[in-house]
Length: 233
Image (cartoon, rainbow, N blue to C red; front, side, top):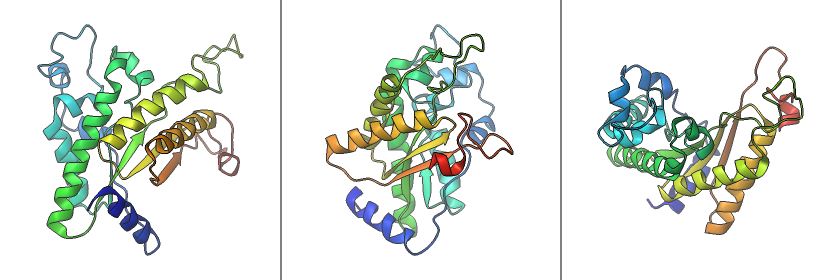
């Protein structure tokens, strides 16, 4: 199937039944107990800062490990597997001095997931889909990180939109079937992501499904930026 056929099949299946999304990626990676050298690989052996914990980096340094995680979820019955790109924006990767690698990380992760899904589809005769994951970043556009300066922000809408655009474009070029704006804790971040994704899809003349998952912080039933589920929607 080409992407247009997969998207059509995806929408058709959604009208028939609930589709199963894969599970946590971070805990699966942590189960392999990679050390600093394991995260670095040969390419980043001399990187100037610690890389342990940068789970998205394994798309470049441990691609077979990442492929095996996808295959385990497919074998367990997942209809949709997510790319290992929760932190693959220039904003989040800046913590590891890897902001310039954001597009490469997204593209590599998308290709690995695509290959796993395609092989499983061929083997089982049933379509399997890839969701390009766009994580929330480690910054919030709605809340000050400084309790002494409530009006301060360490990121703005345009910066978020630019980072999401770069990531989304690379995910699409890598072959994803849909895009997942995930683990949203700030509705303004989500708005920037949706704006960016829509802009990229318009630019590429594509119509791909979009999913959004939000995070409710506690029993208040609100996101971190203060909205109820209904207000978030």
